[in-house]
Length: 498
View 1 (cartoon, rainbow, N blue to C red):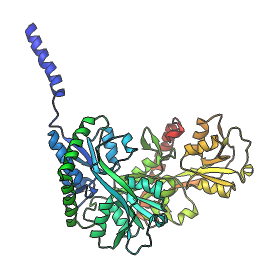
View 2: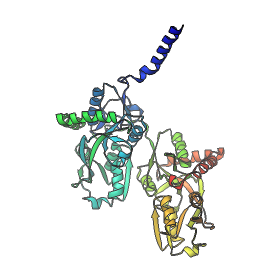
View 3: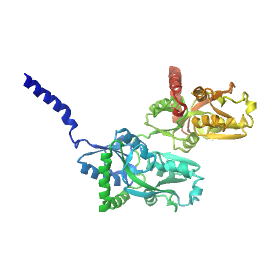
View 4: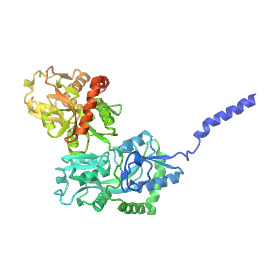
């Protein structure tokens, strides 16, 4: 009996530990990539560059050749996940993907969250403009609308360094090309090889500006807890480079692109419902435990459902929301947007869904109690909001300070950079509540404004869908319930969290 028990115990322990000791050679390497980053990663043949219709289609490119060699080196099959560009880093850093690819620029900021391989390619980021454009250099680039692919270093470099009149983020490289072709963008920033392909293959006449905007290095990415995989990939990359296979891969895929005219990889699936939001305006839109939440997020999802379109949310500075909608780069703008006669001249608004009460914050030790006392003083407000207009026209600010988020406004008050900060009531209450003894809210009644969702001026179909959702949510009681839900959440957060 004891021998039988010992045998059963041995079999039981073997069942537990043997799988853990296996080499996992049958487990696929999951690769997150975007199939619209030619020549690094692209679909083979015409059709969708994203979405369900293309998930089972083969991909090719310089990065794919490298990854196939890594799979052979490790004796593991490859499974590709085709996702929007900005999701590649999320999937790898969370462990849902083993490798990220698609011409990924190596940066210090990105390296805080993922492991990069050694450099396998270098390139330049350049600006492409119509042949007859007056744009000649970086100085004239500052005065126009520049398109780039969302989530890429192109976008951040444009905002932080070039600072053009308007940055237009688009979901795919094909969308960027289309915006340049149809005139929605005056210029586009992209990788040099993508630019050369666009100039060569497009029916339109374009040229590349002589001076590169910046130089970049490309690498594959891995989860920080998987250095072994990164080491194995580095060996393959080094072998690929020294043997000349990398150069052959580059030449092969550049030549292969000649078979696909511009627009051949366009998305044939249902067009995403693109919503632009600013991410620090509770309870409408804010970050909660690294997740974007809020009343406007749930309402946008409901409107997308009403339209039967997948939703794509883009986080942009508030000052860019309405220009992006006006240009057609986004289908809807949200984040507690006040309806004003001036704004109604450039965009179409939904029916109002909430009223906005404006409040004024001052430092606890200040002597200000009335609007008259603030005339000519230093007033702060969030950039691009009607609170800026109020500070300038009603408070007659002597100097207006523009802040990008409420945290900056709080520090402006605490450090006495400004005498007052104008904000919407919900956010003002949170700021005052979290900074008792430092900041107080003046007891001044200011006439309310109404909030609405913004659409392109001729997009009456989407406005009608939004109005139906707003009306249904209000009649059912769901709309006030959403405000109660997110008011209770954001009041528990630190001001940095919203």
